[in-house]
Image 1: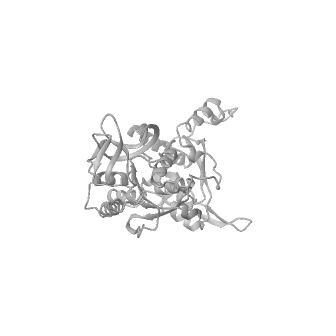
Image 2: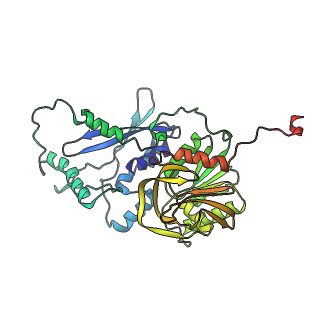
Image 3: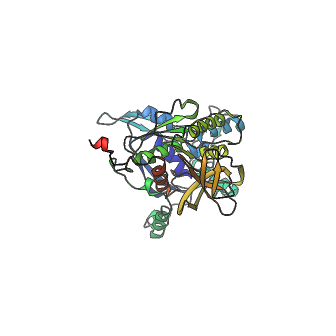
Length: 402
């Protein structure tokens, strides 16, 4: 889940693609972290990169805009330096821009009166436990406090170990095994000129962002398949008729709240697209709104599907994909008659939860094909695009041949 959040930021600022390297083990005085290196290629001014990546989802939550609203509701005072950024801008020997900008999470603030403040926090993911996260905050603060002589000391150095923990073969094997269930799209180096799907070159897609920058990752995948992609915010998506495909993307919120401006705007967009039979792909929130317009009931899950990887049946194939959802639509049959034609449904056999659907000129998926938790995500997109944007026929009419 943390890797997905960091990939969202890399996808936003590295328009020429990127790669995930690792995982590695980082040992500190009181705890150890596993970590990945995200390497991306882009042409943005480093000041733009700083602006887009200044607030880390590991210390604010995600999606970012909604997380900041939640923080404003519940935190009555500012965090001061904690969770901010310390940025050093410059140029290298070749005159190229450089930026070194760590987030401030191992910090101590000493006031003019001599008061010491060591703030800490926890990154909550699907498998977090309250006791475990509290214990981790104590370990995080311990290193700073020990350096200042105000906390438990680190263990005595003792004899220098023959090898680091990260050099242990079992540790290396355990780290490598973490990549087995992940999407190779983000782990492998891809050639910029790799061919996409036949017939997609030169065709244009617009992704309407519902306030979740998973859309940046989705743009990278659609570009890899051959499309020219643009991302627009939901409140300023403008005229989309000049595009071959419209993607109504993910975002936070209750899809049943029709009075909420974002939901009303996205419902209106989808209604127009369905009426005009414009090729449309809906993802997560977009999928939920599409289901509602097709007459399917929406439900709030008892337990959110946050960072959950599942293998699901999808139109005759088994696909392993990642879910991030609180709401879901339900269907009682695999094929439905709707005001917009017959719709094929891929649903959960246990509770009828709709994983995906497709009809004439539109499709929707509840999961995130762009997620690092979706090893089959690119294949799913390719299958859906073959139906939504079929390759032009190579046959010529008699008049064209003449």
